[in-house]
Structure formats: C-alpha cells, structure tokens
Image (tube, rainbow, N blue to C red):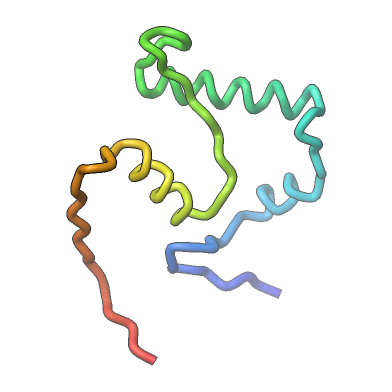
Length: 95
C-alpha cells in the first residue's frame, strides 16, 4: 500500500523513517527525552543567535497544531491594545 501525498497545511505525509521513529513511546521524564528537548531548545536559540539566559531569551517547546503555534506567537508579540493585519492568500473552498 502506498501512502497518499498530502499537499494540505496539515497533517503532512511523513516518511517511513519518521513513522518508524514514532513507534517508540518516550516519557516526558525519561532522561533521553529530557536531553533531546534540552538539545532542541539550545539549537533553536543558537539559530536565532540568542545566548541562553542573556537578555531573558529562552526557547519553550509547545505541543499543538500549526494553528495553535501561530496563535501563541500572535498573543505573545502583539500588545493587548495593538492591531494585527491578516492577509489571506489562497483558494477559496466552498462546499
């Protein structure tokens, strides 16, 4: 059986290696999991050229959908009395 190629915003088609890696459950307190999260956080800070602990920068991993991620960023960077312009670019889908 061949997997379909998904060209939508999500869920995305994943490779066999990703699916294989997902067969192993990891607890949030397992040392391997903690080390992996610590490494990802440090690498993301380095990608943003931020020094951990300097100027209050930190990277927090959050679990959720892409929409959740966008909403969390918007709520973090737009002041309560601020404004946001949303431009929509794409095909209109009608039922």
